[in-house]
Amino acid sequence: DLADGAMFVGRTWNLNSPSAPLVEVPKLTNIEFDEMNRVIITGRAKVQASPDAPVVENGFKLRTKLGTSGNGRYIGLRDPELAILLECPRAWEKNILQAASKLNLPRPTKPQPVVLFIPLGTARKLEAEAPRGFDLGPDNEITSIWIDKGALRFKLSAVLRPGKFLGNNYIAFSVPIRTFIITRDRVRAAIRSARLNKRQAIMEERKARLAVTLAE
Image (tube, rainbow, N blue to C red):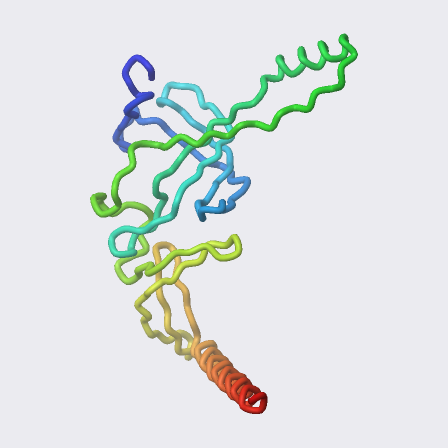
């Protein structure tokens, strides 16, 4: 990697090439958000540099942003950064503890690991990129993405299509591999709930105005 400059400019390859590296993520152990609303993904990955190379399994920590392209049709990772973990080697830790014990010194506290994030590839403007990421289909567009109380939330604009199955009317929208069906009963219940919430909001507003009038 150092000899051919891959450490400085990276390396590119065709995923369909028979000699392309293979990366499999069998398990994600944690997903969280930092104070800048970036998602931090922790898990384990199996990496094979080439088809004839041995499979290496190791833990990883990835920090990235979520973004869209293609007018909200594609959702994917933006500006990913891979963590490098720096910690005291176990051999050094053992020698330090033995030396402290021989010198009758207090047992030293193990320092916390230092985590450094390095960018994966060069940063490019989304406007200049071709659409990439998970394709939601031509009928769906994500209009906004935000983080609220540690949870990912997004607003989706979708085309609803009516249908009928076993005598029940419904409306549905689809994304690849999944179709979400909303029955007529649920639509009616949602309308009733919305009307009730609106009436309660109007009553609360009237009570607030009345309280201000009486106070004056």
